[in-house]
Length: 477
Image 1 (cartoon, rainbow, N blue to C red):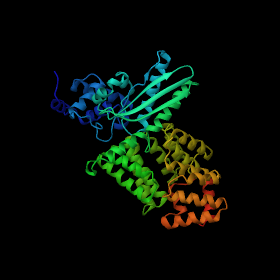
Image 2: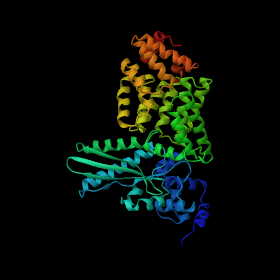
Image 3: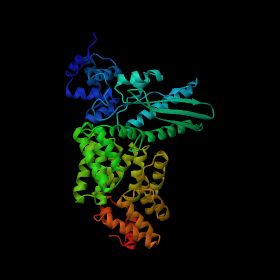
Image 4: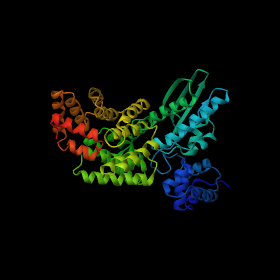
């Protein structure tokens, strides 16, 4: 017997609160393990809940479950089942070669992109095995994505021979099929597994992050909405844009928008992680009234992030610096190692960890390869990457290169002005150092070198000595 939309909505009411949470997360593409970690239950318990859910709803597959939610909420596909964020579907890359090895390569590439985007894009991604069951024919994309309640579609085509691989990737609006972005990748065939990793990394870092394609598309759509209608994910996207200016006003607005997003959706783990990072910026740059209050807010936010998602690489990177602030250097190193484990292909995480290796804990010699890899992975490198590169090069004693990098970063950030003054002073360029120092004092009267050291924090001995010595030369407080 077919149920109408009203009947489906009534049947959903028969689910317990926990069953509803499990069903929504599974329909959105999360695995048993990911659901278990989010809800603090075992994967076997997730499986038991799903058996009950399927029986109560009368469905047999994940696609049926996703369609059930989409129909019960009305004919229009919602941006997400929870209202927190859009949902992304990656259709298996279509292989235009008859050889089985290239079909396997296309499937492996599709699976890797799906798994990595689920970690780094900050939005739910439908599981690969679900999408594999639908095939990869473009004519079916819009119909299938509507059934799954999807907002964006990623599709692709692969052509290959013994010498080159040509891959086309496209991002489209699931509602109407309109193309939002596309790119062609043309690579020589050498080590096939290294090539697969390279293509995956390139695509992920074009899509993911605050300057990535998905965030840019999302922000453009958000700006067309009236402020009263903004959802949690909308506020999150706008906050990310302000967050990466590293200015006093931008950081304050980011904190306001992240906080508003969390009022709308307190379970938004990645938003808690970014809020923690915003409070860390407030602490080291002197943007708040009291550094201890900033650090306490930082601690609360990062703990909430990791409680909701123990695999969030940004939260672990932020936790590492927090632990160093609190004097736990061994704990800081453990957190940074965990961040690298979960974010090894995420350019933004690599950039953050590079800065931490140079100034906080770890081996500073590893910082330069990390920041260089981050910039290779992200061809849309935002200005703050260059600010991070500048402080790393300063710590390495490469002051001329540090100045060049810092001049490509945000001029509204006090730490950029500080490292400019320090680098010029270390080069013996007293006039340039004095100009940067004067601007720093005039524009950021609450900032001091010692506050940056305490709030970043700078605990690597050689970096600490270099900063303090150059600060004396530049006559910085």
